[in-house]
Length: 147
Image 1 (cartoon, rainbow, N blue to C red):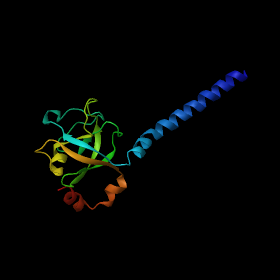
Image 2: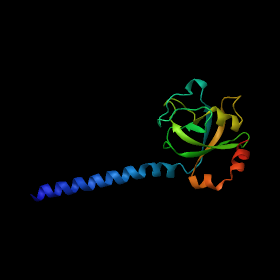
Image 3: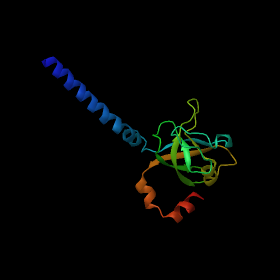
Image 4: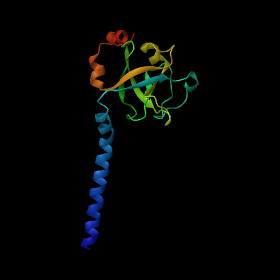
């Protein structure tokens, strides 16, 4: 009888720990990503417009979204073009192909705002931002900062 009670207690504690860990996993991933990373960015081909993304959303090449392999889906990231210092904030809604060596794939709208639509690739810095960061920016500055 005592062994059954002990087994039930162990199962309950294990279940609680699993739930707690799963709830903190996205936050832990964002904690790691607070350090800016640099790499090469590209943008989606038009053929992906209208297809489903990893997040389940329909891909829209005119939206401000991106694909990233390690950040949690839904994460807001600031992407800065290191050639001209233009930046945009996009939401991670998709994943890159596992063999892809780029750090991020952006929509064509984001690539235009960053000024690399004609080159196809550019070196960027990627930083995770919070909703508070977005709310602190006047809407006019969002447009000006990305042009």
